[in-house]
Length: 376
Image 1 (tube, rainbow, N blue to C red):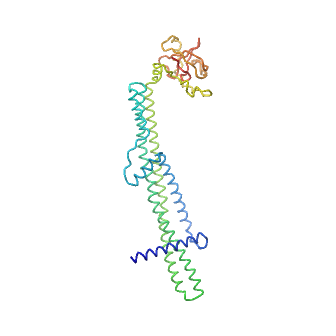
Image 2: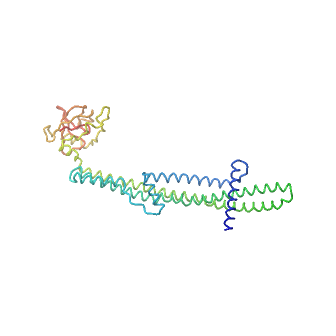
Image 3: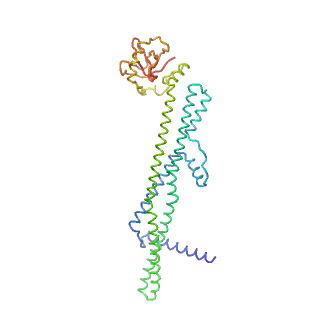
């Protein structure tokens, strides 16, 4: 018990002495031992590494998990060393909703079957996202976290110890200075000078030793940069693989949907609903811009022109259409349009679904579907 009390009193005395020295240094009333330039540069480089690593780590967490509540939950699971529960991605949830809706609407209908297909690909996108999140957490986030919670804590501990050794050294220097001033007044203080010199030598040795240890740790920051560079490459590779996988899924989805290019037109004709833009759509509001011109492949021009001559206005599928925007024909195979006029339209076998044959009196030519509102 006596030992503990004495140690506590000694530690309190050392802490108080260091606090006084630190305060006097800040007030300019005491001299401070400066670290060598190399060590100062290493410390500045380490601080810079820590600050930017922390920012990159936090922002990467936000990128991978935008939901702050989910991030907090994952943080506590990691601290408690427990497995993070399975969490459905937003794309997977959307895909599930689409497939459930298809069951209600009827999987045999064009809309229902399309929902099933799109829902399946949304779930594939969600699976790709989960794999990307998993690989990024292992290959990028974990090394950054290990540095911040492991290596940096060790460096910080040794730097605090170095600062304490530096304060002790400056305290011994101040004591020696005072002892020498007293010695000049009375020879009886010579023992105090010897004691102060001994304490100064011990403090200098401990300071030099701690400075060397701290310097070695700080020089290891270069290895940290090399490790983080490797992790950064792996993160970029994971991102590239994820986006490439998403692109492939979307291309496959477009191919699946292209098998039924006129499904929306069939729905519109059977239900009496216009296949063109809705009259209430913002595209029909005053000042709205017309849609972009649909593609018109050159190899389709000749076949379309021949079909125009073969098909008569009374052909099956002839309908009236209201023109939504002015349209200037790109060539002789197309028909120029004026907004709000009524024309007769119909299609021909093998024709691009983005185009129809339009007639106005004796004039005839191809017209883009997006510029029309089909009437029942």
